[in-house]
Amino acid sequence: MKARHLFALATMVLTVGACNDDDDITGPGGAREFTATLIGANEVPVVSQAGSRTATFTLNEAETSMNWSVTVSGMTSNITNAHIHLGRAGGVVVGLTGFPTATSGTWSGTLTSTANADLSQGFTWESLIALMRTGDVYVNVHTS
Image (cartoon, rainbow, N blue to C red):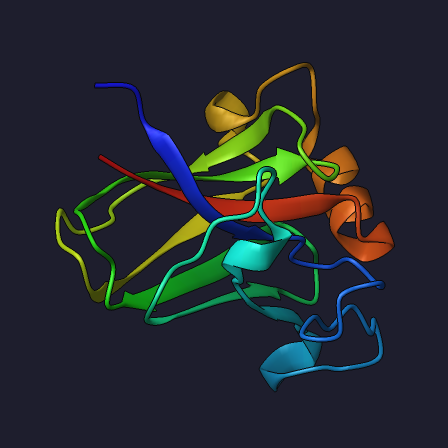
């Protein structure tokens, strides 16, 4: 069965009110934090989905690693995959791994500047960070 894109939200898109792309927001050690509420209405095509979804990305001060966490609840089928995508409906920039095969849960991981094997389409670590800051990427969680 083909994976279905259930919901997406530009993680750092300025035009979406639930996003935060303020470079001045810092956490411990000067880390930059980007947060988003994932909304089916922002999917192309639009998807109606119950439950809640959030994504948080925290870039360390040296900009060499980024911790991420995605939480979902109330999905109608199991999660199969998740990615950071380019633009409103662009291709995969980097995959997010370690998610549960469940309809609810939290998964997290770390992306690093030295482990770029998951970056696709010729993107570099620096270009991923730049895209996040300009609001030109979004998070998409897939289900069966």
